[in-house]
Image (cartoon, rainbow over all chains, first blue to last red):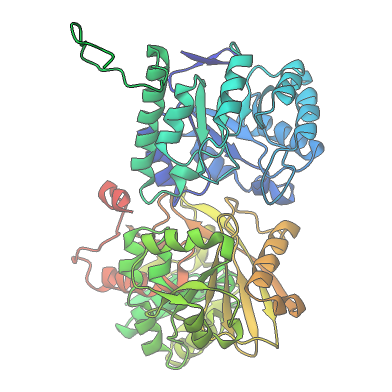
Length: 258
Length: 333
């Protein structure tokens, strides 16, 4: 079973909670997906220093799943650290999905700020889930700061492109065989989720692909199945592709070379 | 029949109209000193049920389909039936396909047709969607005129009045939005700007699709435009944030750079009352009927909700749709 910072999670799918047509559809989608954890943002909802978002946050908590608050919308180390501390107070969890955005347009992580924020938050007792790129050196630094989970993107947030650099993802899996790796951001289709799970990733985190589907509940269910299928395929040992045909029926007794 | 309507937002005013039209003696009590400042005051005034269906449940289309007719009949001259134009910047045209696949009642328009519909946008967008059956009005003018009309026909208005202690009514209609104590309601904060841009005219609301920062511009009299509106899960009524303002202005500037020279006449913040499925409710409890949860569809849904509330008062045995939440309704949403 997937274990993140000592917590066992029965499902390998984590869902975001933004952009759904309504909280009711969000709740139904989460249930249909079988996800065992949800992320929630609070930076913007806290605007003005208030707790105006409490009603929505209590709806999220009523889902009775693990809540992974995030620092979405933070562009500096200071903002991310402040938001993480607010999240810990509001949700009563030391889990934090750490996002430090470097570019407003591409939503690419600022990996330098990310490492610094991870250092501060790990030192303060947070269980940090860093949203990062597929860069191995950055990943090493994050682990060095005390992160025990890595969350590489597979494409820019909300792009629905799916894994644009499978080689990098493969190499990341190979370099960190014992670190839980969660693909976060860029997943557009259930087949994308299945693919990264087949590569041996431990879990998938996504939001837009479900929230903005025509039928979020059906799409959530499809993603749940895809994640399970990819995981089971990985555990069952996939065939490596080869250049020549291999007949599935043995052809003993016939001349092979003609 | 003496009826007390609490709240003079669009839900309260339309309910007062439907009740008075059926012969009730209506008193409207509003906690504020006037019509200004409530959520309806910040509304866009778009009567756009087909566009809204992109993210809203089917009941919003069903209940909102006849809204333009209602407003036109009650307030002649207020409704502009010029449709809605939906556009996207070249790199976001995928959003147009997505929007088109989720909605009905539109046709695709190319650069030439966009120029015919909105000459000031000529050459700026290559593709768009046109929803010819939609309409818009100016919410503030509509509320003020409806108030005058109701007052002129004998409806009593009590502004600055805490309705808690008003006695002697046969029925009460609670249209107080977020001020009602319904535990299931949550607030969805919306921030808006009113711009004045003398160098541009639009004949109809223009929606600019964007994966993260959608925007609409609703034209008002004398080159005024309402730019709206953010959707933030918060019931804070604090001032508009810099980020929201930048996003709204950026959107307006993307529609046409001349909005860069617009003056910012007003910034506004309202909180939309919403139930968990974002659909409205008419609920009866004792002698009180509550109309709430109109979310971002106040002017679109208030007429239908007012008719249902009035039917509940005068024809209590008639079954009323949306009287309360049902799972079936939610699933179809």
